[in-house]
Image 1 (cartoon, helix red, strand yellow):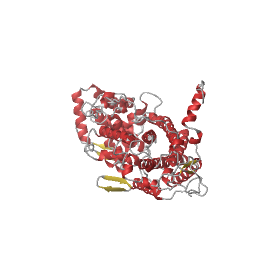
Image 2 (cartoon, helix red, strand yellow):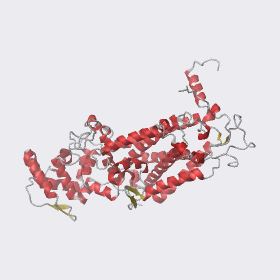
Image 3 (cartoon, rainbow over the protein chains, first blue to last red):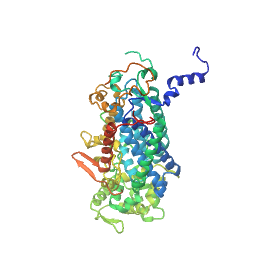
Image 4 (cartoon, rainbow over the protein chains, first blue to last red):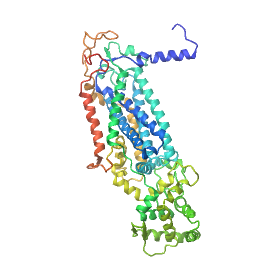
Length: 206
Length: 332
Length: 48
């Protein structure tokens, strides 16, 4: 490029092309050292999240009482329950794998941190989900969790006894946050590529 | 600190051989495999759904506990009636370490008036067309505080030895100077057992309701809900946060959060919630900042699990050439 | 599945068998992932 384009659109496009060319976003090849099943945990977590959201969409569409009163509804709740279990199982396995690989090296600290934030927000997602069940478990969790929320002042505006609030946060606000951060996490991984093995990169602090 | 020049992937991977790797196919396989697993689990094991309790089921199953709780709401001895922010101006459940008490700082935002919301207002409504109850309420409201407290203390004491009759859902208390309380409490009990209190507790203030603060606080004040929870090992001192009803896995990822409640200094402390939240906030920050924490970020080097992750050898000379040729570094 | 779960009670630790199975399963899965040979996805004959 000999001259800076004046169009904002062209500048935006050039910026994206520089930071994440499509050949890096969807490469056909990986470094040879991507040769362990540990590398698979991340994509399986994404797959589980996909089914969490899809089953959640069906549950949301038919309303919070549906799954209590129909067998099909109960089945979709079960899909949602087990896909959440799978999501956490594989997310934590992915965390263990990235920890022992020290995946934050070579300028990837941001990727690690976004991942941890996803983990923490997922816990909030699960928490608000359990509160939205409209059964005994939800009642008990609400009655107990309120004390933790109240103790830090959050209970003043985050009322776990308020089903409407918890449900709205669970079906809309938290999923938006999770999806945005997962998208960012994937983009960050693809922008930098998979980190080199420990023996092949700078050691401490980078 | 050396200036970080953003390195392109081309530069980063110079000299590193690559192999074909189909990311999209991998995602597709992951989607199908996880779906199969989830469908099998859902079909075979289903999911937990223990029906919610109601004020009605509570009053029917444990009338003595119900009436004891209702009496406590009037005398101000229940947890919710003395709680403090965010519900009311009490202080019994306000947690803090010295001056540090965010619960107090945030103030009252979910106003709950236990004696009126849970007992007196519902009774006022039930008193329509019920002269006995109306009279009892009148007596109660017109009495001075000392007299009222005398009735409440005596009745609470009497209830400790009350006998419930499971077949009728009623109970008997020894004779005592209880004033209008027996009429009031028996009315409230009947109202609850007929299912009238559930809706009433919810609808105070409007038609549409999605906020269960009042009925849940009322039920939480009693021992019935907690007794059921203990049976399912869901209480705080049973690692309950991690557990689920029935034989289902629970929220295993909360293991560390619930762990702190089992050990000193948090176990049994009235500031346990605040303390544990602070502890977990610090630990979460630690997890977030691992890349910057000496020691924590070095464990992967000291415990070389990485040697297993990266035991793949580079491709041999006859296979795909590296993208950016360079003398291959010495093998590990 | 609706009957109460069995629990392992060792000193201060109290954990349900379902939870133990999940956590134990995760450790086993991680170990397998570390040890099992990996065959590339999309390579013509897997690992060369």
